[in-house]
Image (cartoon, rainbow over all chains, first blue to last red; front, side, top):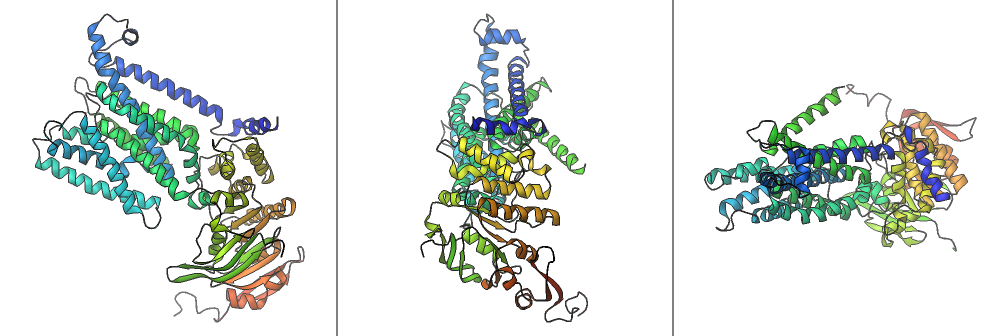
Length: 348
Length: 275
């Protein structure tokens, strides 16, 4: 068959290709295995350490140890699920932003979204109506802040047409303004916003099934949208002129992809706080393994992002035991190491 | 006239703010020919090509593709009839050649955006025409400048469009790769019957590889015709601002311009530090 023949032509020279199909499949399977391993570790490790067998017993309902049940089912399992899904969302958001800006240093925290999430949640915690000031309403409010900030940054960057670099500059501007507003609210309300500081660092401590219930529907929709936009991202990666020449409506496509990135970031951060660097690092790692084709890069980035945040959270809980670090501290250390690595690579 | 020109500019006027880039310009591109646009920097070559490829809205006037106003055609429909390669395109370095070339099928994609049999055929043919088959799985940033440009041309060929618009396809390439790209363009015209309109910086290349040279200056066409008729000492003086001799290349028979002085100077007034 002619079609099959032409399809197999490139793979005949696969060994010359740095990221030919086989290599990608291997990387994908390895990432799944790594994530599964981290998941078991996340559920097993902590102040009460369980064996993998104990974990399996609890998960399959065969455990007769009530403490194991509580630790796994009520504490560690929802927390691990939230970490994985939020990590995947942040990674995907970074990959989308890096494609539409054609800049590999683009990241969710540069779009203003993260600062918007934090400001609105802090405002709500300080001035929200009594009675509903805390609890599961906060992420819903925070999401609005993130989406609004992202759209404001986009509005500022537009000048007839949107320019990817201006978009990032506007995002940095919006972030700076919102962060100083957050600082003011925190200073003025030092008593009322006790739990706020942890929000601005980002933490997974105490994430339970109600958080998961808020996160997963949002995540399901946005992750699916992100994976479906890979083809469009590929075209935008070639630059505005090439994409327009191919018949892409560049402006409209970019707005759609930007909105997906904003929704991913806002949804994740509304549940885990201002976790940084996952959206920057995950696409970089995935790119080393999958190349730049977004149809491979995006799914692998989601897996890497999930592993990074889950791994960071396990480390934050376990390394300094019995003290637990905020997860955001662990991801910041990860970020610092990553920039060191980038610098060393450039000096070469 | 039974057969409209495949691509035409009809009274095209383009202004950037108050600066006029093209002034009431008329041009008809004949099917199956290679047309080279030449002119000094800022003469409007790129602007004209971008207008012809509907990357730029005209302030006044119309661009016609097969006799139809290009601005009224759906943009994907235009992409099936006209492939445009902008100047100095760049792709993520980790993209492989085949992944890049695949993007050329976007205008033909069905609702599911999956590659079908005719897509694979077009990709295979585009890679083979440009000699890129062996490079299919190489990353873009591992290619030489000439190979990279051929990969981009393969992308435009995968569009299966009968008209090819190239904006300075040889910029930043070494002389060998410049010829490689131009030879490829010529063979695509002769063997595949593609209509080519391209901006060319080097007059020798325009004279050797084009059927027709259109010279632009300050957004207007100042000369138009076969290379020997356009490439004259007078044109080089008035358009490019150089005194030159025109010789005939003994091997190719194409006219060659040898510039030897700048018009209106003694050859030293423009040197730094002399004023």
